[in-house]
Length: 209
Image (cartoon, rainbow, N blue to C red; front, side, top):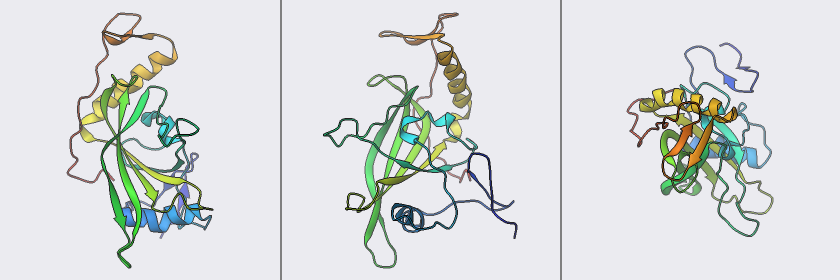
């Protein structure tokens, strides 16, 4: 078996034919819990500020699921609301958190939160096909345990074309060629045309990894 290699961004490069596709339980028990307790991991998962980043700017191949360790900061010093605002939009929670149970002792070891990325500013953001699953330890608030989370980021298959549009709009925003109004939303300064965005999320029947 070939040795495990890492790219310049510390993304795991597995040998041909292998895929990193852990279960929810494995992510909590074998990666997140050891990370919080500063115990060596089976192999590295990179660290990134996922909640404050546009998903297409995160390191790795956007055609596959990507995994990151991250921390979640509160929006206000005395509040519990998480800060999930990125440069070009924000992450919004959808559905209810799923409890992750250890199959050996049937104890709840963590939770899985599903979030969707919205372009532009809340509350009139535009829904995209970027999805994140955020895994959190059940006892993450316990004393001595750092509030690490694992984020699994993926782009639904129906959103591949919109990914190109997202990158184009991102480049225009960096160059100052996009402005916002309260009626028409984001517009390009050079031609005045409205940008388009994906509407909704479709379920992916297969495994993108």
